[in-house]
Amino acid sequence: MSTSAMMTLGLFVFGLETLPYQEMQRQLAWRHPSNSRVGAMPTTQFLGRDDETITLSGVLLPEITGGRVSLALVEEMGDQGKAWPLIEGSGYYYGAYVITALDTTRTLFFSDGAARRIEFTLSLKRADDTRADTLGVISDQIRALL
Image (cartoon, rainbow, N blue to C red; front, side):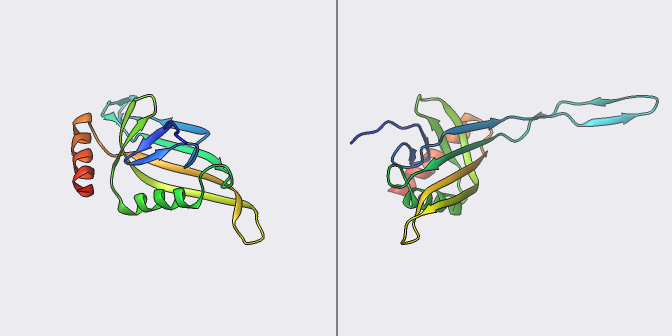
């Protein structure tokens, strides 16, 4: 059975059989510190972009969708501490991201203790500054495979 990718993070493919997220939040911020002035309103100075984060959340039903193996793979990627290219299934490139958190909640258990339902939230933080940085990230990943 072939499936299309919802998104990829490095070599991990988000899809129905792995981690099918139901919600994606993207947060962008810009830095504007203020300076106090005597007898006048504080002024602000634009310093550029601040952190960019993406949060993917969803519900896994291991009988139908992905489960423990997919979560373990993402956990292992987080343990490596590397920045991974994040690419939407449509081809849109978001940048290189590190995994900052993986939260899971297991409910509705089988008699052997395995969860019937797993809610997950994956938090990502952008780690590259430009698209040129990504070439290095991808090259490093290819070298690691060889």
